[in-house]
Length: 84
Image (spheres, rainbow, N blue to C red):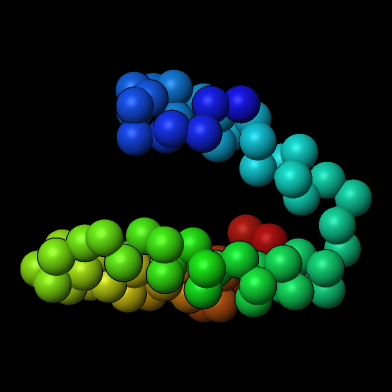
């Protein structure tokens, strides 16, 4: 696997994530998945935000808030619950 994701094309990154994520989660129950997310998300965010300028950090955090709002709507609203 190529570790220099910054050098990959957008399409190659997307393809890699589509392939890699199901393999990483395979065989994990909900509890294990939650524990993994609790461990990995803060590290990933720390590594992502550390080299950024203050403006880039603000933009990234705004994006994250928006994405979390969309995930809440998708997975926690009546509409989202009907899709699960």
